[in-house]
Amino acid sequence: MNAFGVTASWHVWDDPQVGWERFDLTVVRCTWDYTIDRSAFVAWAAGVDRLANPPDVLAWNTDKTYLRDLSRAELPVVPTSWSDPGEPVELPAGDFVVKPSIGAGSNGVGRFGQDARVAAHAHATALHEAGRTVMVQPYVDGVDTAGETALIYFDGAFSHAVRKAPMLAQSTVNDLSSELFQPERITPTAPDPAELAVGEQMLAYVRKRFGADLLYTRVDVLPSPEGPVVIELELTEPSLFLLYDDTAAERLAAAVSRRL
Image 1 (cartoon, rainbow, N blue to C red):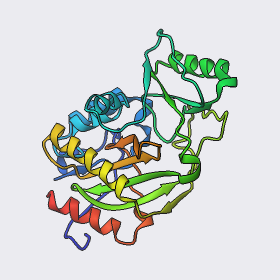
Image 2: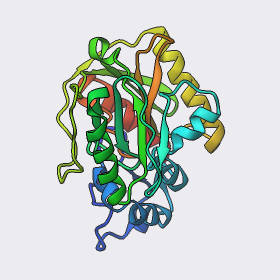
Image 3: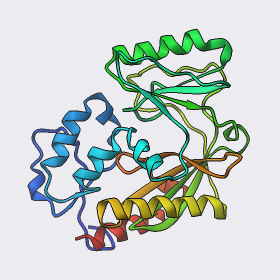
Image 4: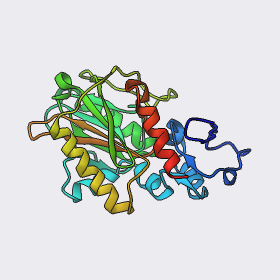
């Protein structure tokens, strides 16, 4: 039992021996393997009575086609084109990124230049053959100097942020891997006002769509000439980078206890 009077234990989501009905609250954390069988994960979530984040959030957020909804809402997201298996892939000018819409930890992500368009098509074809919807995005090169910022919120309130160094050198391809995620270089950071403003826009959208603040929200933003743009809105399996802020774990524990 911790300082908030809460007793907690870890369990694997697809362990058939776990009786989820025994718990007052189940908190989804670090389920990196949902990408292997997303349909099974979504079905499991739908069968858990008290889940944070809730099942409808997980069903929406575990496929990055949710970025279409954010774009339709005129929120600042990285421009993205989509192709389902059997559909042609549109490749933009300049450097670009090809990745699966269901994925985590940068697995299946490739960066290509104009001299590697054949390789990019081959990578997209491999993803299609694996049954994946393919996303194509321009490479936001501001990340090469400024990095990617992850903004973390608990119960709709800003907690802390980290800076992630660029992971995709030119002509880098991460295959669909058995590894859970690709290695990252991470440091604590103080986000600037523009990044926080984008984070608040994302919180407002989530609050309106799902009717309440979520236990946790992570907004990943990249620098662009027009200002910060969202690359991912993480509501399902994110690393919340608790080790990069001395009081972050306590804030999360307090948020959990408020839901009991």
